Length: 257
Image 1 (tube, rainbow, N blue to C red):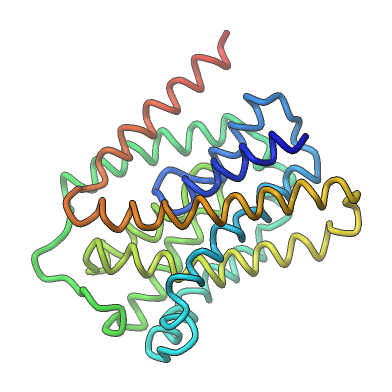
Image 2 (cartoon, rainbow, N blue to C red; image 1 turned 90 degrees about the horizontal axis):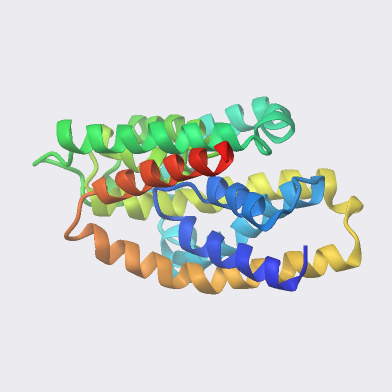
């Protein structure tokens, strides 16, 4: 890896973290395209720079995260199943799934198909919860269960929480905002756990690459959040489903060559 690669990773992470297309999946595919092997550092790098994107949420939604107690309690409820499942399967995911491009491509493909099916069969119901403070604790917990599925690279944490929330009865706008907020403790915990276990192995240059990717992802994610909020006001998520299918098929074709 070099500085240019760190910048590219940061841009990819910043754009994809909050869209239902899997930031982890895109980072793994980016590594494959750039020819960077999935070393222990790169696996940790791909996890850690997600925190840079997540901190853009803190910059925008700090009141909801640290002042509004009703919303804070619901975020905590949603984190419980994610934390349990994440700790249980952390080693399996990092050692066996993070470097498997085929797992990513199949997750992208199947996820894209499910997004299209869900939108056409279910979509947004007429009576939905549009304010985060009115989310019930069972709904928040269910969203957390859906989010835990995203431990599989390529599934997309954003997609899992968004469609789990819509299934639970939230509006698109509300669940997109809740997905943003839920990402903060989820990714902070995932990054912290990984860095505690691996940071002592990094070289000074690797810490520099991590800092560059972190800063770039933060800056790019600020724009991505604003775009996504504007997008969901007038669009469904079918376009993202089509994109996931296209990307997966393209990936399979390239691997077959």
